[in-house]
Length: 504
Image (cartoon, rainbow, N blue to C red; front, top):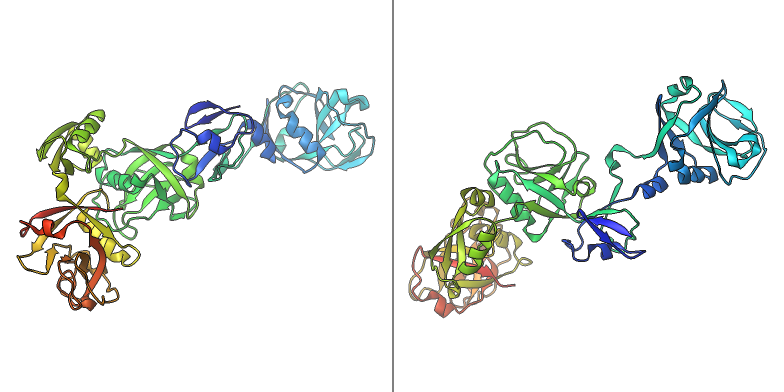
């Protein structure tokens, strides 16, 4: 059978599953996948059908039963039927052959009932009937009731013999007009004609480089977590610890992606399902150009895969040579600084934001020797707030290599102190005091002390003082320095920048 996956046609074996269809495709495990069902499947699923005629449109709602199933299986054959006769009691469209058995039982028909009739009590001349008034009748098809007209009833009074049914099509609600479901079940069985999307594709807004970069950072793990969803939007609240300038403001149409730039929820990313007016609190970060049903149908707790156009342009962590090839592939020139050798590691990129870099067409890549990038381990379970602060201060929250600036040290000192960020330090609630601080412990001064936010590495074991020289109650220990400390401290001076990466 043939299906469409991310816009490309694929030939699959009969009874294939979603897992088969996703082979070789961009797919992030456990994220939502949308499946657009074929028209044939929609006919099977729908209870409402629109009957398009030359005089206007009607809607029929099907009952449960044999005759409604016959109707479903004949939908495509109903097109081009003509009104053979109309009376004060009914309208009759036909004829067409069926296998309906002859049954001359009389029954009651209510106004707007739809049912089958066998002309001359012969199923080779079956008619589709619509009752115009309550009446009893014997039409040869037994019960024969299909359903009833719920909309467009006025048309029944203006039909004339010879009027034609142009088309009969399944009708679905506005929120599911694309006839789509979302699932994470890779065992879901597919059918002919299904169309599948594995991710939301977003075209970034060039007028909002800061907001677009925030979206790129959140999506750098390949997906976004939906924190809450309403009838108007689906939102991701993964990182609200940011600053944000006002950027491009637009009417928030269906598929618009915004970042809240001020007020409660600063940093929140929203995918709009319905049109909303321009808001001074929202920057337009981009527009969904593919996979919109995933955003529409995602609910609280779902993960959705995100692909952006353009993709993030960040060379930090690459060698200078790798960065050159990467940037060239994106049409951007490289200007090397620091250690410019091919094997040097890029620790800084200017400009760092993707849209700014693409617009400029050139970035500066600052390199250092591999040995100058030091490994740390972070204990998120023990001290999540401290780790979050550390990642924000160093830049590890959004790139693979971060930096610290030496605040104070001298030879023989049992610790090294690094600059922090006082504006963020008010969130550093005290952890349980340490019993013994070990050489290599990474810690900070919590908000109970005047120098809150200061970061340090302990160079000697101590039962009294932590990595920043504070006593236990004023210290949060959140990680370890994993490299050779003796080599690290050699020639290290005040205000020197130290580059670090997390050991995983």
